[in-house]
Image (tube, rainbow, N blue to C red; front, side, top):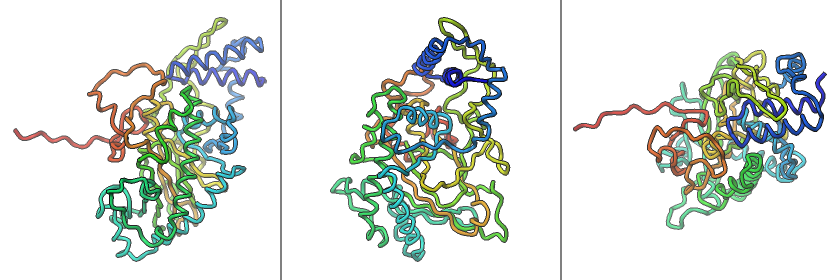
Length: 435
């Protein structure tokens, strides 16, 4: 039987064996040594290949859902909850956020319910009226996007800019026209933006501390009243017209990772799936070191050549899904938080850019449209996307000009993606210049 102290010891050993950050590795090694010294037991009595480790794995093998992090505990600056937050952001890059027991969370949930109704009002407008707000017509990323081809494109969405809604844009810039449902609900939308941004700012502060960065280092480049690409997006996926429900792996929105920093999502039906970090090593933000030894002054531990998956999460995805996809169904009192590519870049892989997709809504829900309410948070427009000061990493060889690794955050809005963030889009074809 493994004691609680031995479980703690094994946890720090595993973290060290999986860490590619030197300052994380040193921290985990020190924690393991302190526990070993305090409880005076030999690490040899806890073989990673022994029955104790196998028993520990079995105790967690049925935990297939993303972690549930408490907003109330984050507000209270609970250190253990901050550690769980970091683990969730590094392992899976996404988690459920429990909004209950916190006034801020209750307010966001109440406003989200109203905004779902607002989104339906927008999507129910006549097609000709919606086309008046087409984002292609005005340029940029805000406004209405309709079905390009109903046989292949299953979604339509409407997006509003934080800067425009809060009146932060330049006085010389003409405000974008909005449909009547949006115009009549501006106070509600403003409140939702402020509260969603407050939640994300709190998450960034706790993550910064857990990453041994100054607590405000991430928050200070995501200020609410500074110009940025923050936005609210209402998304509607059309209902299935099939006589019988489509299979659960019928993909409606291909796998991708978000290009922003942090995403806050409310869904009213299922279909969202997270990709397991073990599914494809090319998508890892945190590649697992092979044979990385953990050495203390009293003993030497060497991990298996091929370490077992972290026992806190089982990525089986359930009986009806491929092993590399995890269903993320809506939970009452919770929203869903995703880490994006920009935050993965700023932390140099300290968090994982979550890879996800949307499949056909399971069961009888498939006969109804699927609605989502999404808040995308981005760094301020003048932030340079590069490794933050204080992140200790082994320097990478420069294979391109420096500017390819240090670009303004605005570049992320046009699809530029950097290697090492968990998801790399294929490069466009190159054409030779005519001489």
